[in-house]
Amino acid sequence: FASISHAVEEGRTVYDNLKKAILFILPTNGGEALIVLAAVLLGFNQLPLTPVQILWVNMITAVTLALSLAFEPPEANVMRRAPRDSQQPLLSPLLIWRIAFVSVILAAGTISLYLWELRAGQSIEVARTVAVNTLVMFEIFYLFNARYILASVLNIQGLLGNRFVLYAIALLVVFQIAFTYLPPLNALFGTAAINFAQWLSIILVSSSVFVLVEFEKFILRRLNNI
Image 1: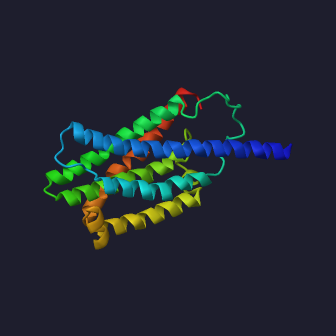
Image 2: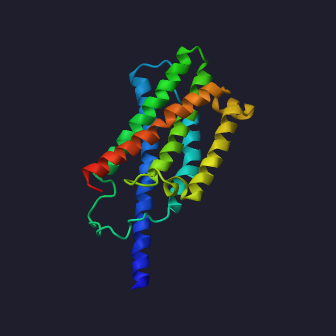
């Protein structure tokens, strides 16, 4: 019986982690798609992200951030849940809503900072570098949200409970510093060095996704009496 119980716990954890990975990957890709779509519909002279920059974001986030969710430990209430319906789709209405919600936040914040830099007289290379770093920082903050689908991550376990998430974030920060400041990568990706004030703006805007998603979870928990 102990083995069966452990197997059920592992099965539920694997299923949870699969949903969390989907809940992370789809909004980040959705945000990129919305950025390009909005730029086209609004008649931007130049896109906020070039194809090679989008490839960079997808490559490093898939290798680092998304994979770290596969190592999520079981949630505290995993064995207190009722058995799920075998016919229940993997993409539930909640997940579809979260994907759309986060996609809009990522796209709006990235485009806003891109336009801000252009209107401040910065070059297109600087504006695009700010846009890419904003999108990546959005994904870093959202990675913490994605660790729990409905539960709050505003605790020690939620913020520090998966060391692979922390390793992935540290590695990604190194990649982004190289992407922003190394001349060979500047030439390859069409980027330029940015200053400290621009980094502060990036962090301030991108952290909004963490606050908004945690607030959304709080509302959903209240509505569902969880």
